[in-house]
Length: 284
Image 1 (cartoon, rainbow, N blue to C red):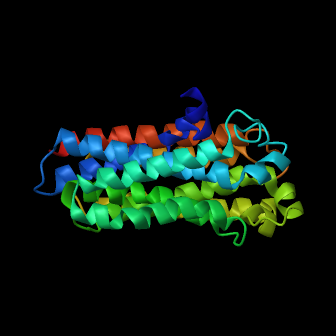
Image 2: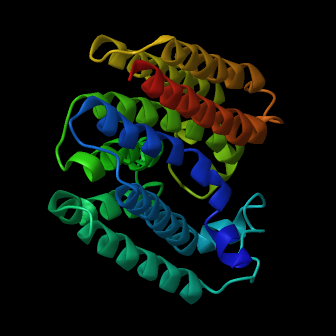
């Protein structure tokens, strides 16, 4: 179990899961649908299965690339702790569990489950042909708020889209920062990434622009639903964490990239989600 948790870097669930809770409780508090423990459990299961599938498939598909990269050669498959076939089998099992779980939620979630898997699994191949791979990763994680909203309602709405757009820009921006570490390797191996395409300085500028957009989208719900002071505190904190990670990383100093990637973004998502949930209780 420890090997498989390492394979999928389970701790990184902290990025998307809080926004799935946001989408779920947004639906519960802004529609006539009521809270159900069963739906919440199904939502969490779908998040875990989808992410397990995406990460295991990424490790499987990138195993040869990871073996060449000094930064990633310690990952489980190139290091020999897990076989490629074991990772692929784990991927297929989680895909099946994801689709099966959506069957018990509602018909819309079930019909859309292959589309969701196509996005989250398809990301793994994008670095081979487009520098927009960071946006595809962001798109995959941005499905969390909308998907969780659909679990409750079975219907699309505008409000969760703002949170999804914020996640898309937020994740794309911090993935560009993370990819700065592999700029030279990506060029040497003819892999596509924003840092390899634009260079460190311009890549950081694009990351900043995406994070500004993320902040704008996180503010937009204010104009479409009633919110209280906890939500505004959450906005301020989230924006401060976005700003802070750009203060940590400079084109000539990447020593704190991992801290900016994992710690600041993990704290940003969890704390913002907590203030969102407090706000939902406050407004009700």
